[in-house]
Image 1 (tube, one colour):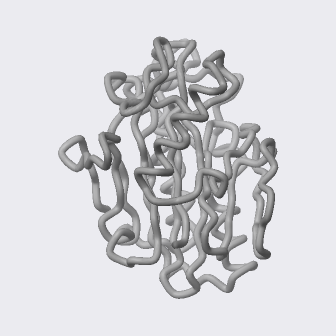
Image 2: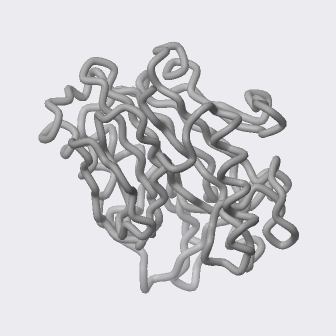
Image 3: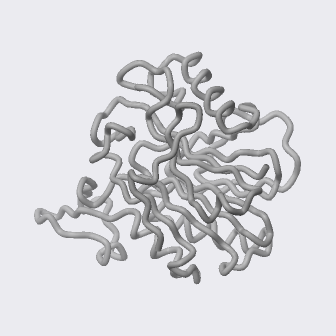
Length: 262
């Protein structure tokens, strides 16, 4: 597995971001895991907030969106932003899309359409981006605790195989910044027995869960090899200077991770 850290941070027009070097080499994919920096939102949303639903001004968020699109060279109207429901809904786009609805209630997207950018907004949950090098299909996943419990990542991999004939050997996957086991504690009401290998007991029926490793296990269970996976190994709560963290801040913004076919 290729682990990325703060030393891998890049900049484009003043916007910091991370990317998977192997995906970047393909040449036909644009992708990035953005941080909270490089925008115009004021505290507590400072500064590159992409959420319209947390109290920030709509025009400011729209300007942040346009700023990102200009930096990465795509039409901001071609960026799909989901109304993430913390569930297991998967949207598959296989036909040209005209006007993109503003409120799509899904937690994952899959497409092979060019000029369509799949966006995931997070502030502790895991953004996961997938590329099929052979079939030229892509996917973006919002993997929160509930989606993880419903095996959303596993289901997306199976949907790619079903909808586009993807072979697991042809996939490149990168797991973005998320809250780490150092900071993510859950109780018995939500804890799943199958998570025991990825959790440390804190006593009093509470556990510190490694949400990223839980999703990586779903990938491995579908036949993904370690060499196909990259991970941005940074806890969003520990690194609040560059990431939004709901657990760390409460009222805060959401950073964008996106992928699109040129």
